[in-house]
Image (cartoon, rainbow, N blue to C red):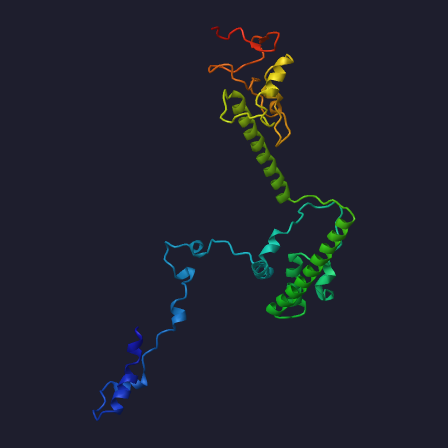
Length: 298
């Protein structure tokens, strides 16, 4: 029955107070026997029981078949801790069990300070200490978490300072530390780059060996002697200097050591080729004048 049908007598009573009309005939009977009020909404929305259901619905269909969520009290603490300290998740942790089982850690009312678990606590120690304060000391969870985090940060800062001073002292005594992964990757990268440099240098040398000519003139480093040194070498039975014999003053290195090009003379015999050591000997007369067999006769 709608709610408005159960409130008809109340509505008529309010209307009669403000008007001079006589009440209806059924008004007295309705006041004596008012209509039943509808049940509350909570009972209306209540699920029907098994004996009230239709025959086509079985009681097993009313059960929630989803598994119940497994929730522990420290889950909220762990989530909040790693939200406030995200880099603590990168700390290395050994998951291998040792042969000896360690002693049971302190817990309960005796655990008054976080340092009782060690001077280098883990995130799990901080979480368990917060839960211990909440359960044994009856502290609010927020206050217990705040106290545990404060002690945890103080111990971690103390451990970081002690470690830095210990490393500096060991380094002063000549200790060698193992390199980090970043250093190893840097050395591997440098080795690969050095291979590329050597390969590029070998490619340049190969191109220089295969090159038949060069645009760089081979100018003798000594001062110009107007051909006197050249003629003196010819009289001594030598000949023009070879490219391998030229020493550049800037570097002091023989040109034959820098490049492995073909050993040729710097003196051009003709316009078609370079003079080599295998050319014919130049003959001289008694006066020391040049007598070339290929010289033209007039």
